Image (cartoon, rainbow, N blue to C red; front, side):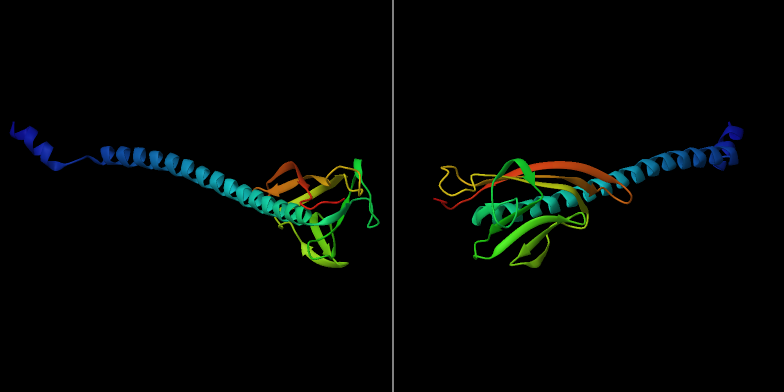
Length: 179
């Protein structure tokens, strides 16, 4: 009994300690690997969310300007409907009575006010590859309210070296009357 007690009081052997530390290191390596993967996925999701929010804000700005404007046309500044063949730019008169337009330039949507560049509407994390405007009811006296349908395709940044494609369609109807 004395021999058994002295062995129990000595503690763990070196082999037991090496095995315990090895198992602990293996478990921690697996856990930290999974944690790093979760961090990378979270960063990617945050990048996509930020880009989508930026795109949504840009679209909201455009549709607000269009809803409060008048004199819709998308063929040229001279005017006209383009309900079957889309226009690459959209011209209108803003709520302050200034000539304004939206067009695609260098992968970004650009607003022009009174012939001078008003600035880029989209964020640098958003690359627009196609911007189409469909306008109907723009002719005065046609008994239809002016309506614009905007179709945008492109890609958003989803983290370093990663992109996610998108295609969005939205519309805006003029608030005023064009009789």
